[in-house]
Image 1: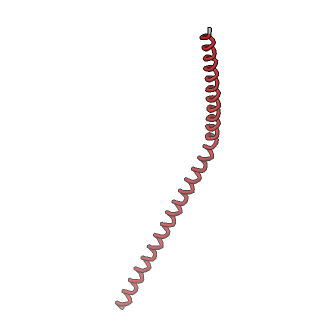
Image 2 (image 1 turned 180 degrees about the vertical axis):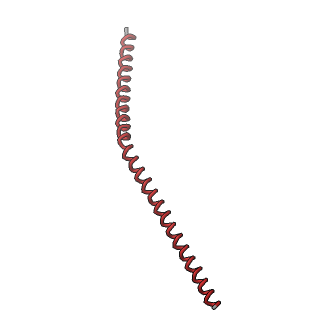
Image 3 (image 1 turned 60 degrees about the vertical axis):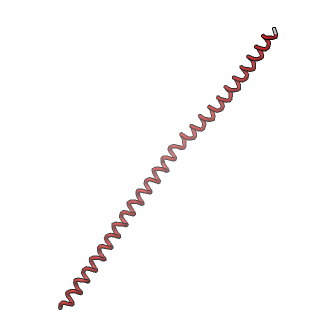
Length: 95
């Protein structure tokens, strides 16, 4: 008979251990679900931020291109003015 009591105690210990494991896994699962929910709520906000940064970067690039074009035009104008001066000086010396 002592064998049956030992087996019963052993089964009760195993059931208690299984119950504790199930409780722990249930808690962990609930925590993971809550974490996933928070992340899913953050995704749209992060996407908006990313789009805004991307838009700002493309606006800066287009502003830089416009600025570079204006700078190039100014340089060309300076070159044209210098060429005109050289022509006028050349024509003055010929006269």
